[in-house]
Amino acid sequence: MTHGTVVLPHEYARNYVDLLGKQTKLMFEDMNSAVMQRPYRKYIQRIEDMERMLRVLDSEIAKMPDVALYKNRIDDFLDHDEEFTLDTLEAEIKRVYEQFIRFRGNNEELTTELDSAIEELNVVKNSLSSGSMSAGGPALEAPLLQGEPTARGTGRERMGMQFSNIAGVVKMEDQESFARTVFRATRGNTFTQFTEIPDTRKSVFVIYFQGTAANSYMAAKLHRICSAVGVHLYQWPASREEATRRIGELENIIADKSHALAGFDRFIRDEARGLVEPIRMGGNSRIEEWKLFCIKERNIYATLNLFEGDVTLRCDCWYPTKDEDSIRRVLAESDYPASAMLVTDIAKPRGAPPTYTKRLTSSLLPSRLWSIPTQGLVYARYLLLFMGLFAIYAGCMYNDLLGVGIHWFGSARYEDPVDYGHATNYEMQPKPWIPALNGPPSLINTLISFGLGQADKQPLYLGQPVVQKWLLFAVAISVPIMLLPKPIIIQIQRSIRNKKNNRNAVANDDVEAQALLDKENKAVEEPEEEGMDEMIMQGALQSSSWASPIYIYCAWAVLFGITLGVLMFMDVLECFLHTLRLHWVEFQSKFYMGDGYSFVPFCHFDIIKDELQG
Picture 1 (cartoon, helix red, strand yellow):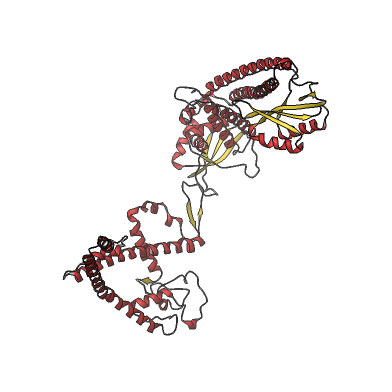
Picture 2: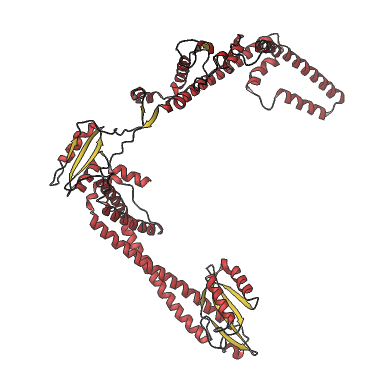
């Protein structure tokens, strides 16, 4: 990496940054971090506002069925991005956005008015069906509800009593709770009737109560309940003529609103078709081109905010050393009237250069000892080899060879390291042991001494050597006992059991006994689950020939070899993981740290790709 300074003329700074983002890879440093001056923040705010408008348009287009966008063609966009300018594109996006917002507002208003007209039409039709229930004669020509119409109800007098009603529309999921609320609030002095509206999740309700609808306490309470629940109230017709006339008016209103909504849908589809069609053959959709242009321009002005200066802009940067000539050539071959330049620092930069990978820095050893070449050795076929080599290396570092302590290196923590044999975690955690104790007791040294039949120099308890000898003798005699007497005893027991079962089956001539015998023999001969030791030793133990002992010892040798191989593999793996933990956690964490930062150049393609994927 090389450190340098890019110098740009103020009038063409945006053009040069755009050119560098296309053809070079430079990582700019923030020259205004101390003063926090961002002279191009107004441009970024304008672009962010444009992106907000595009998100609204994109959400409207996503609601339309069978609409496919052509997107993610970044290379094609970068080859034709000079077709757009910030000012002209901003005006175009605002024009389309304002049209969408205005028509969407009108659409919401038309939709609300259409729903209200449909609900009122069902209320009026319900009043006709309720009034037609009277039986023949003059009753069919009489007013639906006798009396003066009120704001949301009508009263009628019958047998010296006056009745009123309130009508409206409620959602079907709120129907039961609304009916209970009205019944409890009025103490059962009302009657509520519901009629479902076809093809909707709504119902027409009519609440009948005693008294005038205009000034009674009951009417005021019902209006408060309806307002709290959020139902829609509508005028109940006073006569059949009024109901018929209102139905005609509502049908005309519904037809007009539906025609207007259809026109809105056609406009939206026409505008969306122009936004989703490719802007050129093999290119992105128009709205996608606008989104990519906004991403690119926003990052250009965000990079310009890193520069300092007024007449000429300057910014420190890092770039690959091999790309220095190409960067100078790009700046020199530009067609802009004012020239730009790249100045390479002669002195050593103050900060560390960025890297492509994380780097380890040490206060004790040069970082070259932990350089990149070791990464190429991490392959599966080298894993076991390096695990073994690392275990041997760790043993040498701990003055240990096959469990035998060897004084290869001195120790600053103990006066006589030879007396301590195999090094343990006590080396990682030194403690002020009393010299008279001749060092701390070690469990691993005790186990090694037990296996080799040697005396432990740091016994865990009194009389330990005697106990070790008896335990070792018990282990030694258990092996021939398990190999010789036990197979013979098992064979004798099996023969006796088979003879007894055969005699019982022949004497009784019992089919069930014979089936039971076959089942027992099968269970003996074919166990349900066999382990590896049974799979290997079963044939040898069941053999009755004169070579049975030879078969047993050969099978035991095979089983011993497999067991030894598994244990040795696990032991090598244990040594590797243990020493790896000690080095990287216990030791290197005190002196090493992951330092450095990644090289993230200013590149249009990478920036746009990351934002689209993020």
